Length: 106
Image (cartoon, one colour):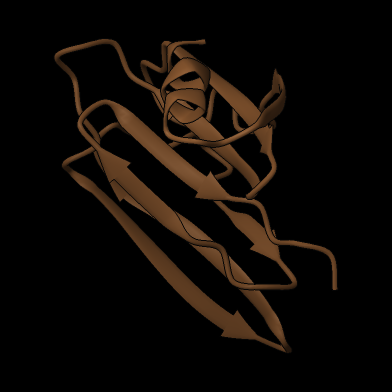
């Protein structure tokens, strides 16, 4: 909820915060949530401080008009280690936060 408060203080309207489909995606996650805002949706994953996502590597591959992503490094990714999408996904990480954009409707 701290991230929702930060977003609100920066002018975002947070419509709701839901469970993330990426819960358990990385070893040691403290939490994960889906944020729906007036500027788009995204998933946020959190590690306990002082752990960080600094050792994370995201690999994108394109095949048959689809995008697949796999993760390497630390924290260790879950065994399935694959995200499939019809559109590109953006990833941003800083300190103990890992943000994943949710592709919009076509």
